[in-house]
Amino acid sequence: MIRVRKPAEPPEVLQTKGERARRSMSTAYSRAPRSYQKGKRTFEFDSSLYAHETVKQALIAAQHGKCAFCESPFEHISYGDVEHLRPKGGWRQEEGEPLNQPGYYWLAYEWSNLFVSCTLCNQQFKENLFPLQTPARRARSHKEDVTAEDPLLLDPSVDDPEAFISFREEVPYAVDGNARGEVTIHTLGLRREKLAERRREHLGHVRALKNLIKIGQQPYAEEAREILQRMQQDSRQYAAMTRAFLR
Ligand SMILES: [Zn+2]
Image 1 (cartoon, helix red, strand yellow):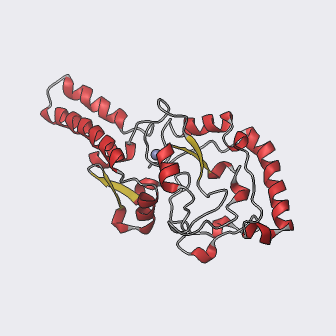
Image 2: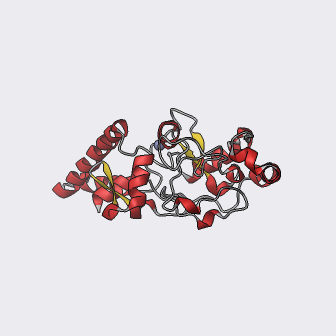
């Protein structure tokens, strides 16, 4: 996981249609808060807005075609999911507990809440989880303030994930055992075996290049140095792991 720098200006569809939808949901909630809290009424979300092509393309560009969470490139095999960091339809503090409603409906079309992720990170692992350090601080409606929350899940557009999660070989770990790193690794399944296999393979290449540099035979050593430089760039797969390995 690395820092994601989105353009400050949200795609137009979010500012127009998305903003209208947010206002109309807020009004509906204010009229019948208890119905929404009990799940008798639920919001319908329009994926043609939050996952609009312009939104998706802007996210893909900002994330260099990689999943915001596991840093796997996905464009060659899947469309990727437009993912809400704060879940729009309902949330869970812990795995296995019933879904709490409503979700962060007022952030369904909010630029800062959107990322693009691979299907596994989103659908198999994160799902509706959004744990907080202090659950009592959770914003339960558009009238409450999400900035008062203390999320355990890292937000790659706000936090610097590399300060919280590092790697021993291909295995991610929470720096100094910090809770946010640990919860993020667990919630997103960042230690899953299939992902570890990919990272291990990648690390094999990194290690081979490093050895070439060590041997020092030119021009191969110079070429290896250039390749390794590129492999550490944000645009490259598993950049956080590569950087951690070479530090
Ligand atoms: Zn992923």
